[in-house]
Length: 110
Length: 116
Image (cartoon, one colour):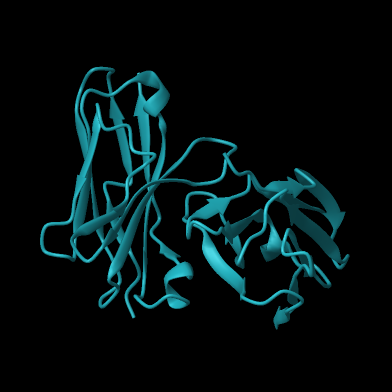
């Protein structure tokens, strides 16, 4: 079936650093969504993207819908301890189904 | 606005036993989803309801899993009989109706199921 490839799988950064992660697919998606999941909780929607090329910000978070419609990236600027968690991309495909990536685990070193 | 409610939060059962999970979506959300999230993976859709009708259950193992949403609000997901590989977090999500809003899903805290 269709898959979303998220990279990196995990990241270890220092507080204050900027973070970049991305999601790619061999197929076209019509919508891209980015979620964050904290331990023991459900995913929380961060940003939704609906048009190719769209660049959207939510505070320190910025996400873009790739021009080819096969990829998306999420940037976090000036990371803080509460940014720790798992970030999932999800895409809505031509069959109107939402598919999730496997996640990028963000760790912040003390 | 109250979020998606799920219960129980944790459940431990032996294989071949039955288990049921309950979900109450955000008020006014017509679409309800059940996902299975295995450790280290992203959520996988099991079933999607629009009001009380099933929109997509293509990935639901129907020989052992069943779900219902009788009055278009609350939903239950049942596993009977459970297998070891069913150990996972079961997430419920809801969204507004309407094409664009339906992709913005709000998740509950999940039920962590351990099958021994």
